[in-house]
Image 1 (cartoon, rainbow, N blue to C red):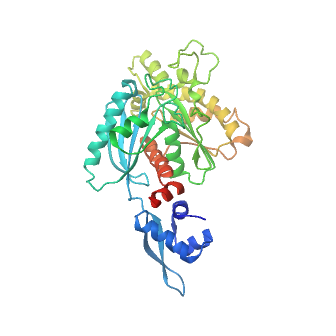
Image 2: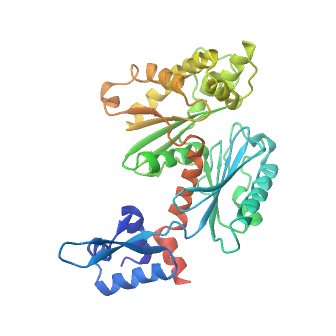
Image 3: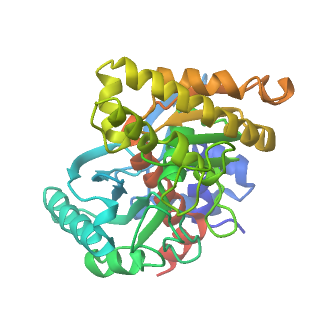
Length: 381
């Protein structure tokens, strides 16, 4: 029989429901529905407010998920910096700070800095703050069973590091670890494309990765390596060494790091995708040209992704997310794909910018910590 957690799941799915709606959707008795709803109201997981007058009847009140029930801490670890934020359960950012710690600083330095900044931000929330969990994203594959980085090419010292245990010991809250592109993909899907059945998010920063959302859920693959297109080999570029130690990878040819290298050779110093992004924002023509060229190479690989998954949306994000990148990707993606695979395809720039991973991490935390099973366990204690 559906429990209170199942009722909450229905309310989260539909946004707002009346008691009558819950009755019709569950098929439970009126008394059982009332007890389930009262249990959720008593612990503050839902709120009942507002009226909607039905013709000839009494006003009905709407049940909503209480997105203020708890705070979520998020940390997005990038190659050049880390962003720590506090959000509500809807992913709305309440506070945010950028920390000058990069993935190359190693897990101990990065995670200790994240914990320190999280404590600082939470101090401003008051003693009554309830933290649901901390969600952290990293620029590499994450084992879905352990939450530990799994042979990440650009994260020296992070392989199999106990990230969840480290942060749990430091902050005393549950920890969720995800890939950065996966998190950003879910953030885009939940915010801008809630009805999408298949969405691919291509993150082009210092590296290149893909987040895949199928049926509203992140697809991670067997051991967290799904979407790692940055290490697809590109013919004709066997002389370019990638961070993973192989030659000719897409990331070595067309990532922000590759464009930064090309800009430096032109006398415009750049070391990362972040630097390239600054040139693009300033309207630099060389950065725009090189980014468009990179987009063409990326588009050739994404054509295979599109043929395999037939997504409705391909979203371009990361530090190189720009009109030149979009143009370049489109120039090769469409000609190299069957018309059937692209007839309903939308290729666009990300809508959330640098907040994509933050919003996605919040969604991942809520999906886990407020699942039907988790809520029923919580109420039974």
